[in-house]
Length: 246
Image (cartoon, rainbow, N blue to C red; front, side):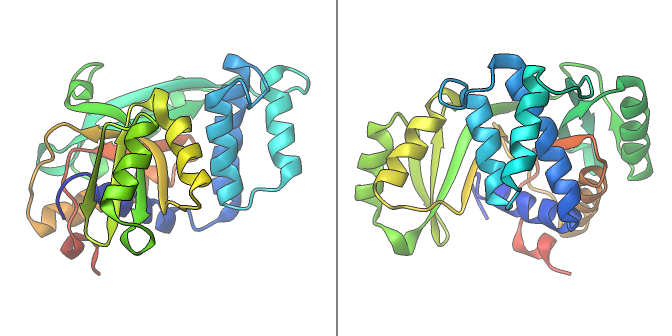
C-alpha cells in the first residue's frame, strides 16, 4: 500500500484502541479546550476550533459536551490547564514516532509514555530527533466510486490542494494545513463525502519493514493511543494489509 494511504490504516488501529466512546470524547474535549483557549471560541474565525468540533461531531459527541469544552477553553467555565506537547521517539527496528499529547502534568505523561515505548522495544528521543522526517499536511480520502480523477483534481486544486492521486479504491488529496478548510468546503459544495479528513504528520520517506516488525509497531501504536493524554501518533512506517491482518 504505497503513498500516504497507510495513514487511514493507522486511524483504523486508533479506532480499535479507542473502543470506549467516553475515552474518545474526553480526548476531543481536550482538543476543543486548547483550540478555544488559543484563538477564541468562534469556530467561524478559529480554524483549529472548527476542525476540532468537526472531529467531535463525526463521533457523535453531544452538543452540550462540545459547548462546555468551548466554554472551558474561553474561561467561561473552570477547567484543567492543558499543555500541548509532541514527543519524539523510536519504535521497533528504529521506526520514527511522533506522539502528540495534551496533558495537565507533563512529568507524569512523559514518564508514562516513556514506559510504553520501552516495554515495546522502543525509546524516547530528544526534541528534533525525528520531527524533521515528517511534514504536517491536510489529508482527504474520497471514494473513487463517487467521482473521477479529472473532476476531483479541478475541485481540489482550485481550493488550494497540492496533489490528488488514486490510492486503491480512493482518491487522496494532500494540502497545506492552511488550505484544509477551503478544500473541505469545496468538497462539501460538490456533495463529496471524504472517508478521511485529517491534518496529519506524514513521513517524507516512508520505510518498508517486514510484517512482524510492522505488527509490533502497530501494537505499540495501540498501546500509546490507549493513554488518555495521547491525541495523535505518527510513524514513518509504510503500513500494509498483511500488518493489519490478525
